[in-house]
Length: 122
Image (tube, rainbow, N blue to C red; front, side, top):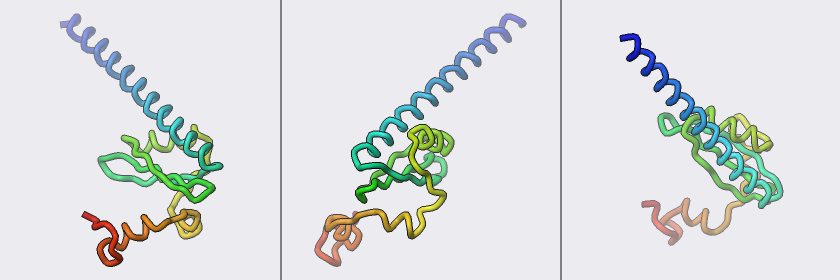
């Protein structure tokens, strides 16, 4: 019985080590994508929004008004990625932060949908 317990402990440790490596991989990958976005748009700011079981959404707004987003599996990974990328993080997507987003014809027609002759929202 002692041998079985030892094997189980070793397997659990190996799985935990794999999970930690995967966590670091996802954080580093997201941080790299955030840094690339910031570089392409003259800098950037972010806000992390909790999505429930799906994880967390990282909303990025560039200095030029361009915006994008990423999804991380957990809010902790999202926060770590944003911190590692070195950009400013906002607690909320408030009016001042939202005002930095530049929207064009596509976004307005998409938001209005069929009312303005744009694509439907379905």
